[in-house]
Amino acid sequence: MSEGILLPTLARGTLLPESERLARLDEAMPQLLEAVRDETDEVAVEATLACLLWQTLPQANWCGFYRRVEARVLAVGPYQGGMGCLRIPFERGVCGACAREEARQLVPDVHAFPGHIACDDATRSELVLPVKDRGGRLIAVLDLDCPHLDGFSAAEADRLQGLLDHAFRAIG
Ligand code: SME
Image: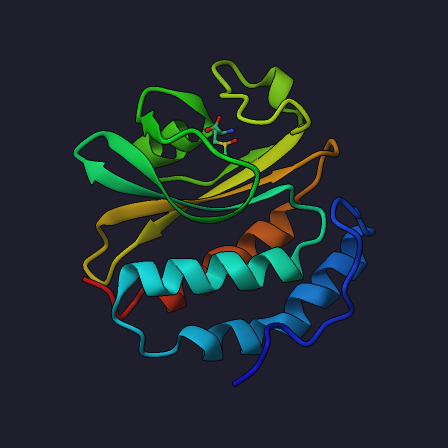
């Protein structure tokens, strides 16, 4: 049984240059995919990815899932980091926008995003990605927060979306 991602451990909050972040993500990707391969339980996949992405993305101060629990309401799921708010309606925040539009929200400066929900005042940037099941139904969002401006790039978002699309394809 592996203890997690085989990558150098960096101090929490370390923002590497984008090229190094992508190299780290590319190295971790086969391990991430293998860890959840064929798993059919949504929470098992979410908990495992929250754990392993936390190790892969040292710039994150929060890493986890909000699950769709009503037609237009998200509730917090497995995560790493400080306590997150418990429920987010589709009308609110970056996570709500992602769920509502079923589209990636790459926010380089959360203070410039109207309606951003500040669970942690230290958060300065954010990436939220839609999670869909086998049938294409939105079941959750992946929320990544960073204490630095511009903590996530479009290329990281592309790779992470590819991971989610694979990891949840046995669900539903
Ligand atoms: N910042 C998010 C809320 C969730 S937490 O930060 C963990 C948002 O605006 O959707």
